[in-house]
Image (tube, rainbow, N blue to C red; front, side, top):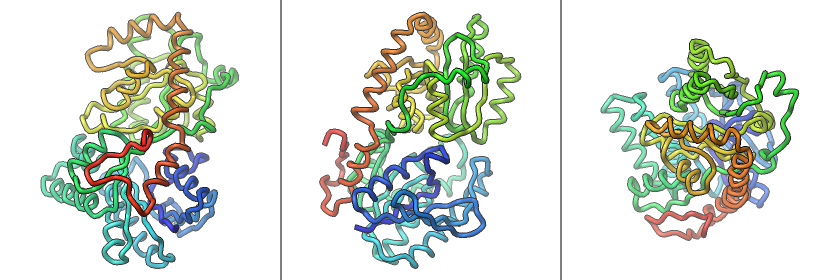
Length: 406
């Protein structure tokens, strides 16, 4: 079988960031699927590389989280146009696997189906355009109507859909009830993330105290609500705690977060540079808790964040600031504490109790590790995807197939 995998933001573990597509494409190639990948890079010219059995085509389309709205849109449209040109030159595949975001990647699937008679499966990582609408990035009524119509058309014309969380799956079934939906969440790379001894040299270089350490590793954007971690750091400092707060990442709000930390005079809050997965695991090893946060918009409750799956693979207890799927997993499996709006005093008191109960924190981390191994190992996700791309579907339209239990 020949498959073209389309993902504008493809990254490898060495580059850091979201590496879901790397592991899925690599797993397909290992299973005997001939995989070609279309992605983008900031280089000036086209490049082609072989990456672990994947023939990767890099289109010269720059993108950065710090781009403004119109520059982002221009990047999205350039990627669509260049992907179409490249697809016409490649040997004909049996199937396209198109992943969002952005939603505009769906245009490639629509075009390929119409012009080249190629079927496509569409993977929905985040709900577009609903997410930018709710956060206020898109406000024009005509544009909103156009994007919602485009969303429905992309879903309706797909061979099937893949959702990364139950909330996303429910949305897909509501918008496109005639399509079958498979639930393949983000996953834990147990070979890359695992419990390990603290690097005392790194801890010393950062200046860690002997108190609790709470770590955030991920994007520093508008929707990530990392400012609430700074609020927790301020709360701890005001109450005489010598707790450590580590923030490792990059994004459009990094400068604002640094300025806020400075204005609050947070003595034990440290910003670390964005790094590889290996470096992330090293930072997680210093932590007692991993902070998982999103801004409080309903659409963000559906997210399936990589940082959560990295943290549980590393055996870390979890602090979560929002309701939704991740909150439900934390509560159901006893992985940590919820810092929900209006309930911080109670949550902080529980964190104070655990400060002297490291055995209880360890039990939370052990349960997290067990969940990663039994339900969210990357090998399980690859096997699910192999089932999805088989030519004979196992689901009827309107069903949601959670292949974890199929």
